[in-house]
Length: 151
Image 1 (tube, helix red, strand yellow):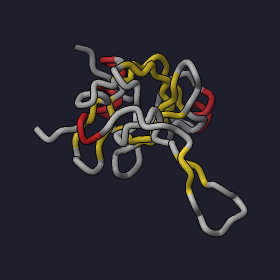
Image 2 (tube, one colour):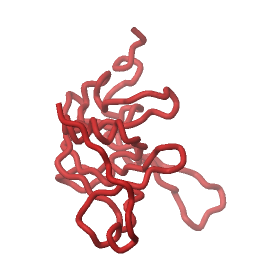
Image 3 (cartoon, one colour):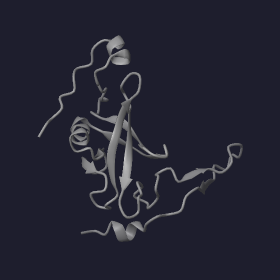
């Protein structure tokens, strides 16, 4: 079982233009992670990772996040069966955000705990209207009450 020890951050030049992953975890130990469908490019979700979940992700090639609400590792699909298989990992210029491209598998092929393919299933209906009304842009793929039954 391999483990990753992320190197200490070095110079700005090495962080921004070098070839070594030097993730910048925040004071809370977390780094933001955007998850995107490897085939369509659709943004599926946003979550946080800590060093342990990033290590688990790299080791298993299954997207693993840190659940802030439950204070524990969260392997995507462990309950729903909708697993995210990591095909690519990128970082931004100063290495304080991660982008993973995944192949989503499972009966519903959904990322969102509310039953949608993407967590971004609503949009502001009118950018010029102060009412701030949202409209749905996707159909629900599964019923969360059935998928996430309390055990």
